[in-house]
Every structure is written in structure tokens, then in C-alpha cells.
Amino acid sequence: MFPGCLVLQRMPQYEKATKRVLTELDIHLENIPHAACCGAPLESFTDRWLHLAAYNLALAERLGRDVLTLCGNCTNTLLRAQAALDEPALRSDVNETLDEIGLRFEGRTTVKHLVELLTDYVEDLREKVTRKLSLRVAVTHPCQAFRPHEISSFDDPLQPQAMRRIVGLTGAEVVDYDAEFDCCGSTLYLADEGLGLEAGRRKLASAAQADVLVDACGNCQLLLERLRPGMGGGAGTGRMVVLTLPQLLGLAMGIDPGELGIGPASARELSRRSS
Amino acid sequence: MSERDLDALLENCTQCGLCREVCIVETLGAHSITSLLCGEEQYSSWLCSSCWRCQEVCPQGVDIHAIIMEKRREEEPPPGHEANLVNVLRSGYALPVDSGVNLSRTFHGLEPVQLIPAKWVEILLQGREGGKTRG
Image 1 (cartoon, rainbow over the protein chains, first blue to last red):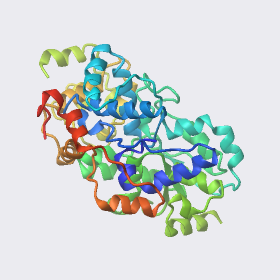
Image 2: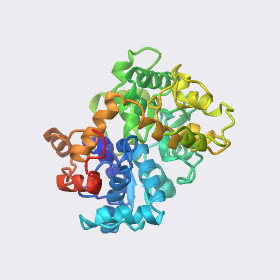
Image 3: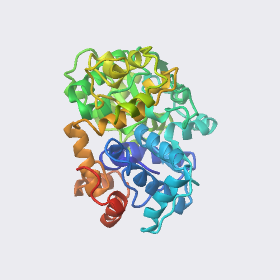
Image 4: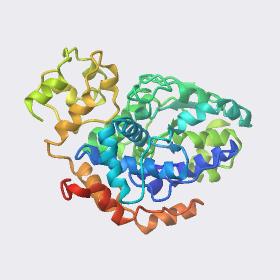
């Protein structure tokens, strides 16, 4: 598994819930030892982002494992790097660098975001749901995991549906809302905090009819859950519970909220809303 | 980026404005690269949520991402992006890694982070070109 900087260092809850839920599907994950940043923050400054992306992919190749990602941005970056490194001259240049640390990129690993992996296991998931959730759930999609369509073709790039189907398995009602397919604004927050928060406020307000907003990306979770207090409340932004997809799935599998990294306050609120 | 390079990337652009219509930055009243594509002068290549929706809806297949990346290398970066760059160049990670990270991971029953060795970061990010990267 490649959790990415944000999840690895700031969101153990998301990683914990992913591992717990996938264990139920008999999928056992190991984090790639010595994995670094995917390379995304470098791309705006230097072409060496490709070296960092290739390094991570080469580590996974050496382990003989496929790569599971939890973040839209990492997914997009690693997939684009893999495609770019089909070009022989570029690959040779990158491999010359990797050779200095005893690694080699050969393009043998597969990169999948959690939503795609869960889609592959949808029938197994259906069997594992033991507790139908009586909740109204709004879905926010990890937009960068589905785009550009040239490198990521498992779902509709503009109106992805896979996550809605997965949430539907829990018995929860998946609600439509105007801003469903809009970006949460998290990456924008880096450039302009006010604009990023406004994008998040707009999304939360649009989804205010739901009990839960569910995401599948560290960036979405950062903005919509952690940074929500900075949005000034109002229009529903302060009320709904924001969960990651495996946390919601885990609840439907009857797993204790604590094992999914869901704090006591959120667990109480979920219980109140579902009764 | 030279005028000629930009012209080449924009060769197929008809200024239809679809990219601007779907841009979250434009929806919020600010101006992204899509304003430049529509012939406006007021925009910032950094005002972007990296959602790729503009490129996905473009009927002409314009590589808007490539234009953003090229323009960013000319424009002053916001402090948040600069900080991430500095962190990655120093440690290999966008966020500073401190002891609290592993405390929190252990609390949640997760294994400690096995960091990338500093020497490898240097090889990967400085390499033969040494010091070419900003930050």
C-alpha cells in the first residue's frame, strides 16, 4: 500500500480503516518500506517529479506487489508517471538514477485507487455487509483518481459512479446533491486558503441534507473534515459526519467504530442519526 | 514558456469556454488558467484545484495540464506550494515528519513509517544536474 504523505503522517484513521476492512476481504496490505512522496508537489517546479514517482513504483516492483493508493492526487501522479515512462529515453534516464540506489523501473506494477479495488470485490463486499445502515449518505469522489481518462478508465471521468455503488451496498440511501461532482477544493487551499475553504463550504452546504458525507481521498478528508471549523459554520457545514469510505463500509460490516478510527463523538452522532 | 510553445499547446483551442464553465476556481469568482485560455489577461496558474475537469471536458483535446505546469515555472509560487517543495527536497515528504507521527500511528495500531534514506532523496532529486531544482 502507498498511503501518501498526508494519510501516512496525518490520517492514520483512514489507513487503519482501509486495512481493517480489506482484511475482511482477505486482502492483507503492507506499506511499501521507504516509500516517499508520490512526486506531485514537485511537478510544478521540476521534471524530477518523475524520478520520485518512478522510485516509489520501482520499490513496489521489487516487492512484487501491486500498488494500492488512498489519495486521488497520488493515484493520478503515479499513473501518469507510469504512462510517461513508456517513453524509452525518459525511462533510461530515470533508470540511470535509480541504478545508483539499486532499483530499476520496468513498469510491471499496477496502480489502483481504493475505490477501484473495492469495485473489483463488490460481490464479496455484498456478502460481508451484516448491518444495513439507516443513514442518508452524500458521496464526494476522489476526482483525480478518475482523470485524465487516457490513464484511468475504470469509471466515468466526469460523473463517476463506482463509489455510489459501493456505498449503496451498505443499505444507506445515497443522496444526490448539486456539488457532488465538484472538487472539494483541498489542493486549491494550498494556493489560496480562502478559496479552498469556500469550495469546501459550498460542497458541505450542498450536501447538508445527508447524515454523512463520505470521501475516499486524504485531501478531501483534510479539507472537509479537519479544516471544517475554519469555514465559519452555517448552511449545514458544521453538522454532518464526514467519514472515509472504508470507515462507512466497516460500520456496515459490524466492525466497532474504534477499530475504524471513528472517534467517540462521531460514533455517537452516527448512532443518533441512524436510530 | 515562449510565445511559440504556448501557441503550439493552444493550436487546437477554439476558446469555446467549456473549460472555464466547469472550473471550480471560476465558479468561486477567481481566475484560473481557463481565463488565459479564453483570452483574458487576469489569471493565476496557481489558482487550480488540480481536479483535471477542464482538460476532461475540452472537445479539442488541449493539454491544459501541460500549460499550467509550464506557466507555474514562470510565476511566483504561493507559500503553501513553496513549503511543500522545500519539504520534499529536504526529506522526500511533502509534510514534515516528526516523532508525533509514529506516536499517532502506534496509537492506531499501525507500523511506524520507514522513511526514505536522506542520501536517496539527494540522488533522486539533485542527481547529476545538482542544484537545478528551485527551493
